[in-house]
Image (tube, rainbow, N blue to C red; front, side):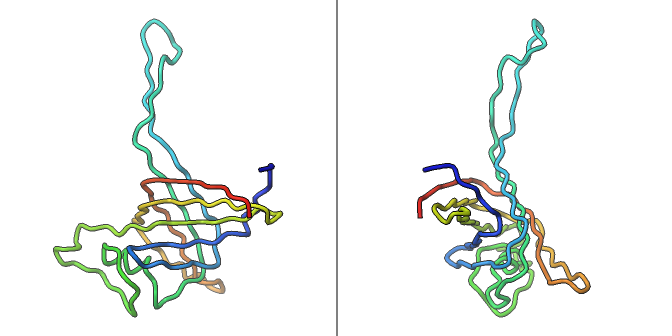
Length: 161
């Protein structure tokens, strides 16, 4: 495969909650940051680092979008319920003992096509949770969601079209 450019205006995002998958449209400002915590080793005999080890992997996710199916809002529904749920007509906080301490998780898949339409790049973040799901109601603007979360695992795959 040759080196190609990736233009961020060509991506599709799907979220999966349990067995329910939702495609999100009008993506804006998606950011995926995989990272490790690290421990450095120093000794009294030198000011230089002698070793470094990685641990505690996680993936920070930031997603903004302005279009979703309100009758299949698995993001808000799962967030309020605290569990992966199917689509429903309405959602509310579940304060029962079964769900009180539960957190819904989502899988996020973003697929980009290079500017020559010769290859794709697919980013997958598994088991993402969101601490909040804001709905921005700005005057004279489209309603949007700007969410940040944390994922458990990350994969990236490239393929020729």
